[in-house]
Length: 291
Image 1 (tube, helix red, strand yellow):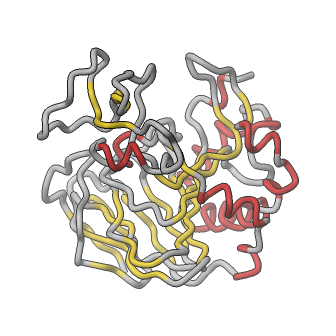
Image 2 (cartoon, one colour):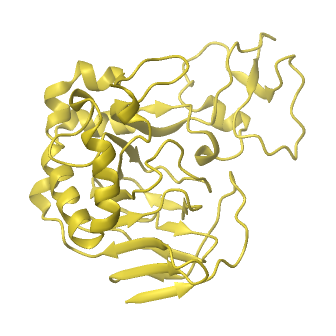
Image 3 (tube, helix red, strand yellow):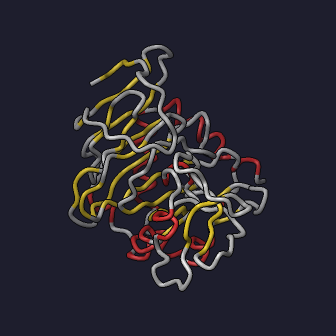
């Protein structure tokens, strides 16, 4: 099925959207005004054997991150406290760097925070969510090009996801060869120690039961696509990946593949239950600048 739709509403980053128009079949969506591909969705094309990954990867996806920005939603005390249940002094409220509380109607996705004893955090953070990045990263102001710390410390566990990545990359080429080739050119010019072999990806974000707020991905290859699939680790429903500006959601299950433009606004419906592990595969935009 092919759909050509114009954007309906301007999505607000950090907001949670509930989309009821859910697609559960093969579908390609194009923007009716620009002709650009928004997503390519294919059902039941990845064999279950490719989801046999090391348990350490599943455990890592369950661990908390506090740097997901707008994907974590508008920062609040409850979100800041998640994972701090055993701390003696917990964050009392989000605040500015001087300790002034943020107004109730603020829209910030990260902030400083004041502890219950009056201390102010030295760094800003976002709401804590179960989401981690593995694989290679390009240069940032703080760090050189590198493998993430967890990846470097768990190389054998990390390698168990390579067959899934290779299968997805091959399917990506078969459905969207022009986008794949744009991405592969950058991939070829990237340090091969920092990319995933026999693919055109460098990095994965792995999430567990993470309902993202509306956001745009940053750092992904501008002329390529991001790939997405699901591993079922428990019993749950919901969590559909949504494109709120087009009022469309996708019911992505284990075995399904989504190729999408990560620079379009996207979010998730609520996840009810536990065990929805998602894989987001992409190439960092500046990986070819590492050499």
